[in-house]
Length: 239
Length: 239
DNA sequence: TATGGTCTGGTGGTCAGACCACCTGACCAC
DNA sequence: GTGGTCAGGTGGTCTGACCACCAGACCATA
Image (cartoon, rainbow over all chains, first blue to last red; front, side, top):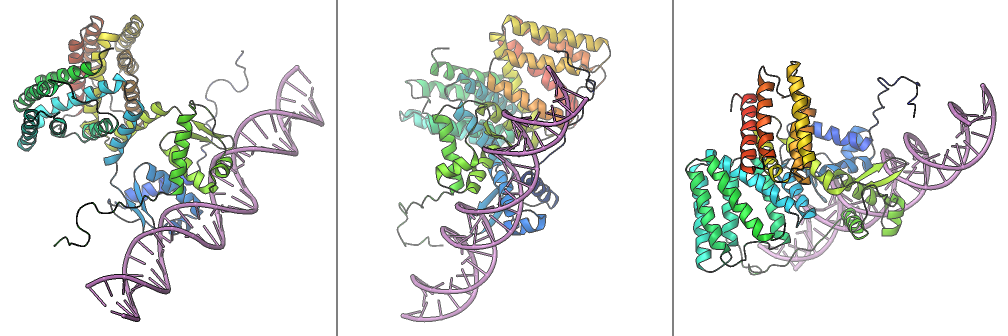
């Protein structure tokens, strides 16, 4: 391997930028949407109009639309037209959902969820409004009622975690958790169906709530972490 | 609004499940990939073969492929064929890309990154191997050299954070951070180009490293959090 | 021997035109 | 007011053709 002296190793030519028509169309569409400030629900031009306007075939337009649809940017209604969706709202959660789906049963996901929810608790302690706190408190009451009834308290648990996450007022974290939880609920009932677990969880939830209400970020984060780690370890006796 | 008594409000008929051919094709492909255990890099059938095999037109196959490509499942090489990508890896990076892309410049992303890197530091404290520690130590040396030379220490900073994340041995978190950082670097140069910042960061990095080396998860997490919050607040004087 | 040209087969990329499936609205018969 | 019919416009699909591109085989020349 002599590495040659053909052109000199420094500053080789930059590859030509070739780009398929369909991708160019997709870019133009995104530009168009941004520039004209189109809102969610607005109707785009028809495929035939787009093809004529851009001077390309209808198949290319359709491929571009397909790509945008797969990315959650637009919605296509047969016989009606193409409509805009609000960006990113569902995309992050759907991506997170898929992610969980491909890694179920790995502790990796629990660790990821721990990372996010702990941060949510921390942020909630500094940002929670009185409405947020009221919602979380209501979730605690609901959970208490479920525990008294001898149930698994799934609804109350869900409501509590949702409330805390919501109180972080960080849309990214909210979407992330939404996707992860939805996927969890869909795939497995790995929840707290263990004797005594609901009551224990309820007590821990109360502790987290108090820390948030008291505006103590470190304490809230610490308790949330302990709560999640505890339930996780119970679920994974090995490891 | 009387809500009618046309059919009785209970148990109305379930809508017919209509599904476009192209989506069915996409599903079949995913099934095929899963069932046959295809690996990343494997070559799929050609578009014409797929169309013949599934009894559909080539356009439908192409739309399905376009959707899969937009979701990062396959890679299409003009003149060669269709190849599989590693599913989870690319999924995570596209997730990260989406996170950054939709919320650039918002503190939301920093908060998300804080969540992840703090967890990485915590995990690293219990899992870091001697090799991991050596890499992080090397990053500290590199950063010290850069600081001495009066540079911004970008490389050393990057290497340090990468090393810590790597030491968490959690592929999801690793990919997530990698994707976020990459998108960051691509979009903005919001780095630590402030007087005195590199030296301060270096000191904080040393503290984090010591906590990890000592096997103290809580301390490592706490110091990482303080480090990230500090630099973030500097970058966002408002807020 | 090796470099570069040429050809060939197979691949994805694009196009045009034709249908089909579906939705909407208008109109009409009862 | 109900339901039927129709027409127009929309996306959904198929087909066949051609183009752009890549890999490999082959060959001519130095």
